Length: 472
Image (cartoon, rainbow, N blue to C red; front, side):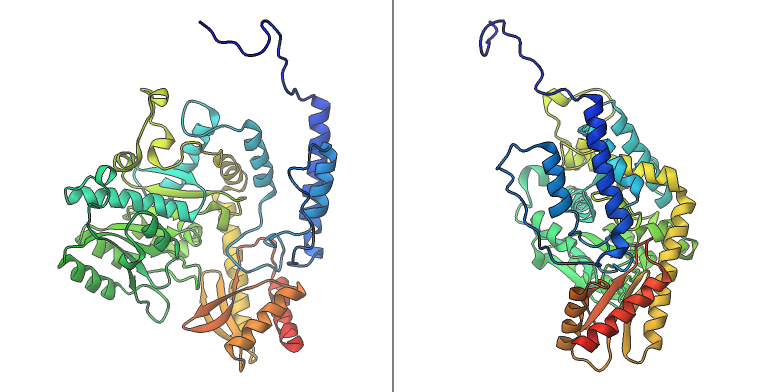
């Protein structure tokens, strides 16, 4: 017997149907907001504190045009800053305009890219193919678009944990860690996402071994070997090493070939954090040796929303062993079980997955790999110019320069004075840099992943630093 709701046989019309003219009118308004923001941003401060007032979300309904007016007045004037030509703080690039519109098109389709036979799935497979081949991974490998490097690393370490547990006769999916200690290895300059992953996966941050760096801020393979061999003499279970192809702090590239040799010798999973520097290593001949070493690792984290200028969010994890990845994650409810190609949701944690691939594919298609090579090389050249200008300025001290990261400070000033100068620089809005610590000393950190920045803008950043010091 069929249960009915409401009056019998009463027709229930659609809640909404969009008329073409109305969709176009809204689209034109949104396009004008995008155009205004992207084209006038260089004339605005690099950053300013939020002085708006967000209207209460639960005080509606209000007219659609009023909502757009409120976005124009209370949201658009207060950006994060990463589209400005004198923004060089964290690893946040400006979006390519095609990526912004592709994101809107993906949202218009609004699929769940868990699996199935629809366009979004095929686009994601194509994006994964491109990066898998660039990294030298086998066709039997796999990958997923995820929210960013943090989720990519968590995904990779979950698979590494599964493999390590199996080798010790443990079923970690059924029994958890079973009272055993699982250990990860990370360079002192490695990203904190590894520690977060260790905590979430049950290892505990106390079981993250920090391997000291050399004078160039790279993980020391000799000390890694010593620590691994010391652990193997105990009852802990070494799981994985995370190396970096471009640390966020200083842009250092770990000696990947030597680390890979140690991991192969001791059957350790090797995960590479390429979230920032990965595109440079994959595309530029200057890093061919590191790229060759990449082809032997077990997993790689990449972030197209960093150095490929794709709108957030667009992270990517590549994994060498497709079946092992599926074994670590697959849990298919009856209503999703098919005999077709395994769903993306069987290779990671997310079940409902957004259509991240369209903007990545669209920009790759439009710019081409050579176009990206030129853009990344240009960012590197501007960073080199900035580092050289710092080095030539007696009032400034260069502390580190790797890839497109430049760390420096005002000479003759204490850490507290340098912090105050950075705060004044940010407050003035003429440029925006981040702060960090290099070898125990406070530094200004510039990271150039910004096609809108020119060499003149780089010089203007240093002028702004001097002005901030004078006003401090």
